[in-house]
Structures are given as C-alpha cells and as structure tokens.
Length: 379
Ligand SMILES: *Cc1c(COP(=O)(O)O)cnc(C)c1O
Image 1: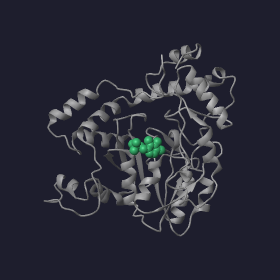
Image 2: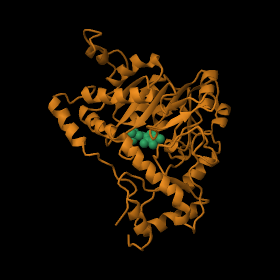
Image 3: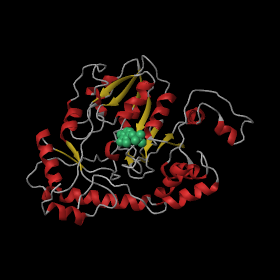
Image 4: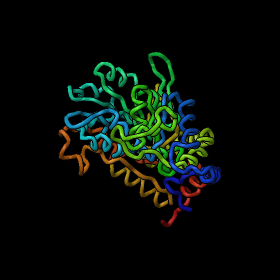
C-alpha cells in the first residue's frame, strides 16, 4: 500500500454540523458556529479576540493592514518560511528584510534580529516552525525596546506553548505577540479544508480588525446593535469564512485533544525509532528548546547534504512512502532575489537543501510503515 505524505482527518461530525449550519438558515459568516469557534480559542488559549478567516494568508494580510506598514517601512521575516508570511506585507508595499534561521533549528535566530533593525523597521514576524516556539522573550524585548509590532505566524502552532525561562509562565503560541495568524489548511493539525484565524492580543487593534474583516464596514458593530446602520469606514476585504466552514472547524475543535494525542504518538514513535529504521543514513532530529512544547505538527530530519536527502527520499519512495521537502529560501525566490539586499543566509539555505518531512497524519498506522519498510514496492 502507498503511504501518502498527508491525509486530512475527518472526525465524523463535520457533515452533521455543516448540515446544522445549512438548516440554521444563516450561511454567511459571523454566525453561530463562527462565534462558537472563536470563543473556544479565546477561552482555551488566552487570545484576547479571535476572528476566523478564510486562510492564514488572509489573517496575515489583516495583520499587515493593521500594522499600517507601507512603502519605506521594513518588516523582519525569516527566509525559511512559506511565501504567505512575506506576501502579506509586500502587498502593503513594505520592504522585507530576511533573517536567517538558527544553525540547529529552522526558527528565526533571535540573537541576530537586533542587527537587522533600522529606523525603518516596523514589524517582526516570528514563524513557529513545526509548531515549536521561537525565542519569544528575546523577540518581545526587542518589540519594547524599539517599539515594534510582533506578528506571530502561528500557522503550524495551534495548541503549542512557550514557557518563559525568566518567569516560568506558560503561554499559548499566538497569544504573545500583539497579533497572530493561524491556519486550518488541510495539512495542519486541525483543519477546515482552507481556513485560518486572526488572534488579537492588544485591544487597540480589535475595532479596526472587525472593520477590515467585514469589507471595510462597521457591520460587526451593527449586528451587536452598537450602531443603527452600517457604512463604509475603512479599507478591508471579505476575510470571513462562511458558517459552513466554521461548522466543519467546530467538529475538529471538539476532537482536538484526541487529534493531538494521536499525532504525538506518531511523532514520539518516529523520534524513538528513526535511527534504527535507517542505520545507513546519518541525519539530525528536531531540536526542541527547553522553552518550547511540541504540538506534533511535523516530524522532520536534516541530512548532511542535498545528495543524502535525495537518496533518503528515493529510498522511501521505493518503499511506497512519500516524504516531502520545503521551503525554498524566500530571499532567493524568483520574485524577491533582485530585491534582496544580498546578505547570505546560510542556515536557511541549508534547511532548504537538507530538510525532509515524514508522513504524519491521524490515520497513519505504524504497522503499515513497518510493512512498507520491510519489503520492496514498485512505485
Ligand atoms: C500553512 C502556512 C501558511 C499559510 O496558511 P494558509 O491557511 O494555507 O493560507 C502560512 N505560514 C506558514 C508558516 C504555514 O505553514
């Protein structure tokens, strides 16, 4: 049997809640299920205000609009990330200053950020790669010292935490920066096909976020009865998902503990057995800093060279197991390379060439993996 890289997991309740949403008679956004989902996240993870969006890309675009950046402003972003992290700020006309990763961890190297800050810097965007926290104490110190906004790209980081080494306080990722963006794309831990969420932790952004969310109108206030008509008051777009999507997401939320438990089981199994499974390869395993928890979003390995990674991927492919790599360093992308300031980002480039992700999804049976590994497959 072929083992895919990802398989979206259905809890079994999705169709039921979607049917309920349809019979509720309200299909557009910001209804019963949207509010239920938003309240869950606010109450369980300590976000001050949540707004569901149609994707994490959309939530990041809302962050970029809220941060008021424009031409001449600089935004610090790791180069080793998905394109959306940068795209949102580029659309507002800002300049991206790409930062390197740590040598042993794909997250932004917090000790190198200060050297990138100029008078034009407005925002830092830490990306919690694989759901593992960036060094948020250091990043929030820079935020205070230079008066910068911190937008957490928490696309992969639902239900994961940062434990401050200074205070011992444990906080959910996405609740630390002033703003944060989550993804419910089908490749993430909890899903709605396409979907996302903006988390707002600084009250001052709430009123404007609601307006940007609803096409630049004060419709949210109108529905709460705070104004007696709604009108066009700012820029915005249609960032909110329909109730059908929110109903799907609600089914996933109800099973979040079970989903996280199963993903952790698989993650831990990989981590304990990986050397024994592949004695003919050398590689390094994920590094989880003391201040970070692990939400088992991703199991990845880092090989000593591109050639070794290629050999590993073909070996798995020969066994009917699909593994994938990402990201292509954004500072070298066709779109940005001529705009980049020319600094070398060697760690980002190394993860681009040497990192590989193994299959990790709820229904992945370890016995199937073992069966595939013990026999030749024609693929
Ligand atoms: C998945 C992902 C995104 C984009 O999420 P969408 O919901 O597909 O828009 C952005 N940033 C990171 C780090 C991601 O992993």
